[in-house]
Image (tube, rainbow over all chains, first blue to last red; front, side, top):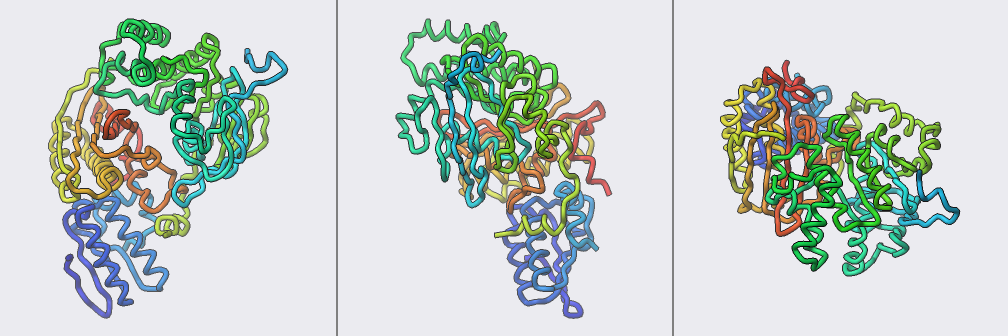
Length: 98
Length: 270
Length: 154
């Protein structure tokens, strides 16, 4: 489980380390569970050293869910390691990066 | 040049009618009808995602279509029994994309594989047949090398030798030029032309390379997103006003921009 | 004829937890070939995606399958051969789609195709197993000649 911070009715989840196939299923569940409560979510990625397509897929799914249910959702602290993958997947202009 | 056009009655080696095929829930081929005539080189063209590889798999009986009929040498292959398919495949050769030579075997062993699988010929005959085919593709002397010791073009030619080792009457060639530089690719085109000439074969080439298609084809079938755009002579295709054909002819680049909304929807749809 | 140097072999089981170690070992292997940092990172992304594909599509999530990654270098090209011993995989699974044709789950193959210069899939005729061969061309400075890897810098 990644640490979360609650502030002003909004949750921030701080992903860290390597978000790959080994952890993305739990990460997905944790992110979606927060969104299911209807609260806005910020995904803090500053401490992510590596993200693969399964991790990126979590973000895409979460964003789509949030949009559908009018919940605020954004990504924060996108570092070069994460940006590299988002750009390759042409998602840098699609996902809401702060 | 094309033996098929020399006599009036045209013998058809492949007849495809209303072919519909899907992969999981997605329909890839949406009702294709065309034929391949005896002695001709038919090039099947389409961009990435057009369905040309799925079509090839259906023609080879590697995939069961949802609807339609495929007759090869006059025999219906949709619903054919495995033993019927085995018989039919003895008259068909296939050279897959990337060559697909087996890394653990020498070039000669790779080329001999179909003979060992389908025939009970003696060793000496097998050796001579192998050498003849390697000679034909200009690889004699390389029998004992492993695929990893060969260049990309040599691997393709080796795969071609394997595809023709049983003297098939119908040869399928998947993306002959992919991964090759233009010179090697042109050599391979010439080899395909020589082959038809020398062995009275009907050849189906699947490619996205228009330059190669225009050089070797008697007729071209263009498919786009599973639909048949045109099936006709090289002239007919070159003069076809359809934008999809013109895009292929002029190698217009694929769309660089992605529609964000549509992209997200596609990535997340159930 | 190509003279390839075998840089090394990484053998592992088809468990997602292994991927982290594979990435680390691969990084060590490639660091001997001073390719640019950006290229190195992209290659690691691609190989990781290829390994994920094997775990998900070849072994269908089974954790006890063997996977072998061989790395070769020659003619300014890095060659990666990923071998598994699972049932034959339909190469259609590995056929990259344009982004405009992408389906859910297709992102990994798209990344793989975007980064690598060449990919070929070699199902074995006899017995089990699949081989995916991937090539990445490097120029004299160890930077990518073609595509994919020049986009990551902020």
